[in-house]
Image (tube, rainbow, N blue to C red; front, side):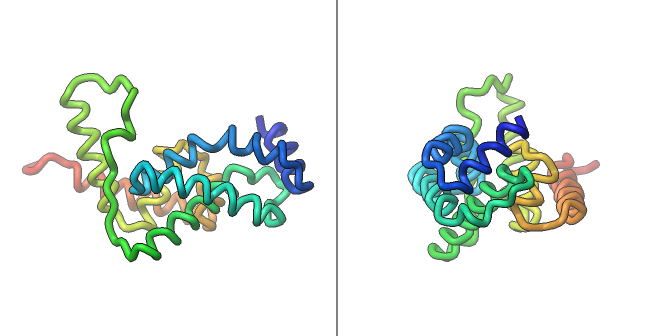
Length: 176
């Protein structure tokens, strides 16, 4: 898979429009889910996902040749999202139930716990929330998540650790 992504990256850097279509085919749903998890509604999520691919094409020369395609596209998506929030001057977001639509999540108790978890993630500061979303919800590797945010892997691991401690504290049943 990495070999395929390296070839795709090379084709993208050479200006191959078919490679751009392949990039969209591979990453569109992932980037859309990422935008939704960052709190954008459906319409904004679609718009920002499209903006991400436009920005990627405009900045194709910045794509490194060392197999960092996933981190690169998520980095662009994160910047597009941040720009959107800055423009709206928004400070909060809402993780909605349709993020898990179509998944067999079991009983109502599980759904309730999932809702509590999403609410706890929602309330994390952005520098802790973003690593959690990228690594645990989008399932990016540590390396790709770090690339996406533009930080070192050790820093990402540290932020994940801090986020998990905060989440555990917030999710512990009262009285324990």
